[in-house]
Length: 451
Image (cartoon, rainbow, N blue to C red; front, side, top):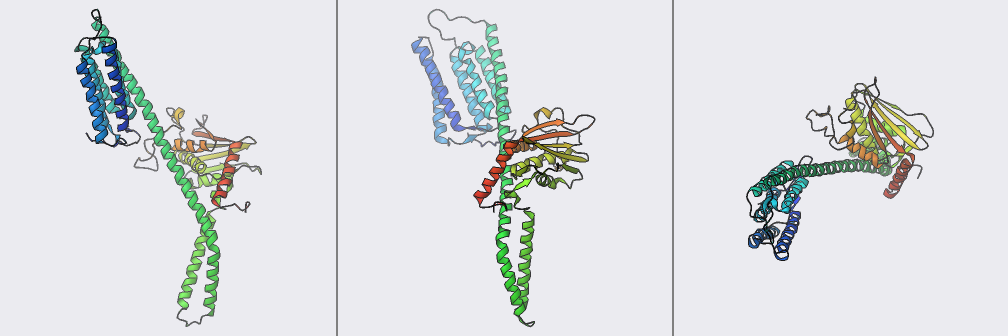
């Protein structure tokens, strides 16, 4: 039995560690041994102790074999963990067969392998394991040795009562298995979505770092290139027209000029060291919407002319989060997207409006959760690889990390479209500005004011 590695992806099982299964089986072995000893020696019940201990010893041998044969850190997929849990069901069935079947109160232990499967394996594997547990419980209900008892004859339980025990066990296996699987699946989805968010944020921070390094390089290389250009110009003036090296010096002059043009272009793209600087609110919104202006949708930004307008630290998470919301609005808008900003001494609010169909009623209450989407495929992705429902989750997560609160709604009829409100307390924006200034000082950069 070779354990298979299980992928941790949305919609697939997360797998179970071999060490976890071995430890749980040791716990079961200890419990079964203690129960047999207490019932046989302490209570004095007539118990087929040798066959029962043989069934327990088989689990001990299996655990020892697995510990010696395979690395404990190995994660088992359905193809390996499923049979191991099925063995636990069969071993429990053998013990119950020897000790009264459904009359034995330990019949509830059938739930344990099903719950373990539900937390780490695929739904199909859990269903098969649950069906096996129910079938085995039915078998020991029909065929089993007498229930061990002391003194007078053992009580006779009616067949109808035993049938009720089997039915209740069946319902418990189904309900608890489904509930455990659903909770575990939601945890896996959230974990995958958070991992995607971290990757997006890391990418944005990496791009910002490269942007800042490019600005620093352009600034530092400007002086030596100016010196090189000056020296080359003087050399060219001192040469005669028939000098054999004149052509090389001319080429050197042209290449130095080209380098200076490239550095000047890089400098113009930095917008005043924006990745490590504070930005007026209008400039920040312009940077957010700029990549989405060439898709045939009008994007209007309305920011009041006020000398006290907020100045915000340029945060990659904030830029990407707002950009994701704008991208979604552009995807669904018919003709126009509007962005309104307003502020007060206590907070800042940005409202995004579009004239599209708005949020679907079945998803509006769950927007912001991972893998919630109302579209089969993205307009800009004809292959259907996007539209997984992570866009709003990533945007919401990144913006909430900056202290924002988001609300999603549809516009009031007769207007149509979605309405998204992003609001920050003024204190949160002050923290972001201070953190940005600290980061710049730590990296050795300074804005013009700080210089």
